[in-house]
Image (cartoon, rainbow, N blue to C red; front, side, top):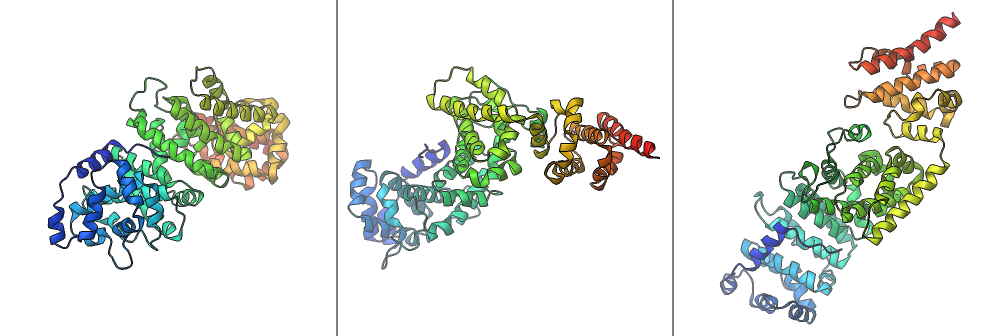
Length: 478
């Protein structure tokens, strides 16, 4: 997928193209030779169609020019001490790769076409040096145009991704972030590159998730903010920027990369949700999406995730109130037929799931999500009377174990979780008192006693009620 270069990159490239280079002096200084200069002049400052014709008639010659041949060095190697020439060659090569697709394939006739490029990613310690940026752009274009999956590309890709992640993390420069994300998109053309991108997710994916969280107006504890609804994003009035100052173009490009990554959802979908609360995050982004093009990417990504991981992710989607949100969106006038198709597919999938699930399924899914909210089952006496024993026996005690895990956390950003957990444990003790020792072995009684000293009034009240059930049955047995 080809995207227009971000404005900063396009401006930098234009300035370098217009810069005069004293080529004849460079030849006299042995910066490059006459043959190399002849090839540069043959394609420099002429129309694209002429360039294409010249390069395609001499692919081996241009391969040798840029990556070296058996008996000739690369022009980047020859001119390594002339930064102005290196910059010019990098811009020229990127232009040629974009206008002459066959050149990218030709460069891979060299056993290691990356040899003279990778060192340029660490060209200097000066953050203003454009050489590393121009190099990453060339490499992204080369890989995208060639669709190469050779061992040399497999070795080079992690280095390129590591360089780009530095720009993606630069929250003080949205322009550099956008360049990095655009180049990420160019690189995710096949399964191997997407799998490697995920493997390096602490570098690659994590900064993108942070951008999406800012756009969604989510606080430091993203999970608590999402479940409790404590977000700051606005649902309307967006023009160029969203919540947190995220630009619409940057948002679109990040969503595009995540959509490309979602084609590996069968393998990584559960991990994406476990590590990044992706279903909750995308539901919030969908609620705030300012344009149809961003809405379509969000819906398509959700569909890829949910359709490949229905048993684990559909329950979370229901808890996040995605079905109701889709109904709301369906009531809008949508001009994009592909968007409408994505919306219909997602609605159909969720409707089929919600018509077959029970209230117990809903409760199990909520506990498994690792975050509790005051959903209907918690305060429903009939629910506990009918289901407490099933809950304790479900998957050999999975649910009380999960409740114990949840209660171990302090939940400073969302104390309601602890209050709800105390409520649930108290209900289990009340309905199945003979199983209270099972809960004690998990440390739940001890934790409830600790929570009687909690700073939150609701937590103290719910823990007191829950402990009362234990004490009641203890006194009765005595």
